[in-house]
Image 1 (cartoon, one colour):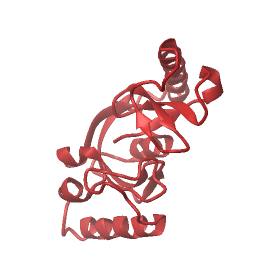
Image 2 (cartoon, one colour):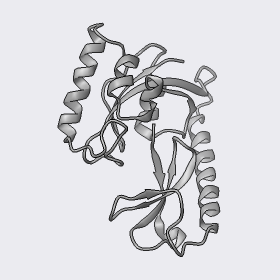
Image 3 (tube, one colour):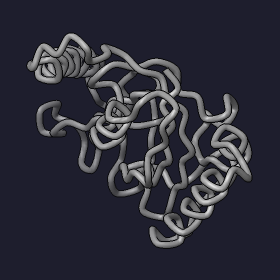
Image 4 (cartoon, one colour):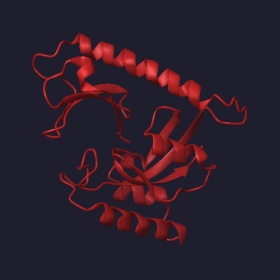
Length: 190
């Protein structure tokens, strides 16, 4: 799943409309232009490459702080990492309204939810399994792996996705979960 963390662009003296974001799917920083919705790995012209190192350092510190907060209760039964599969339906207001299935996604949030709820009904009735549907219907590149995102720890996914994932028991499926990427169904697999 591609998700991102964004930071204040004034912290890095970036050109107008540009901000640095962190790709959780690739664990790398990238540049995003709010005006044009352009995303790119290389810095815009005139940006000091040292900005990327400063950004990575800030991101690492934030992740460490979040990890400490997540384990503040010192619950010995709480897993440090979990594994999930998911099915993502994007909409026109998604962070990146495109996918391997569609170059430009124009469906509304309501239409995305309706589509996802249709998949949810098929799974709950036993007509299909999430992995089967994710392979052909998910707007995430994890479709190539039947929606499998592998193992992850606290602080690696978008907050609402992470919270829902860690709340599930192995084999349990969530209801619709909204993130900046779109709306998801999540099954905890490990």
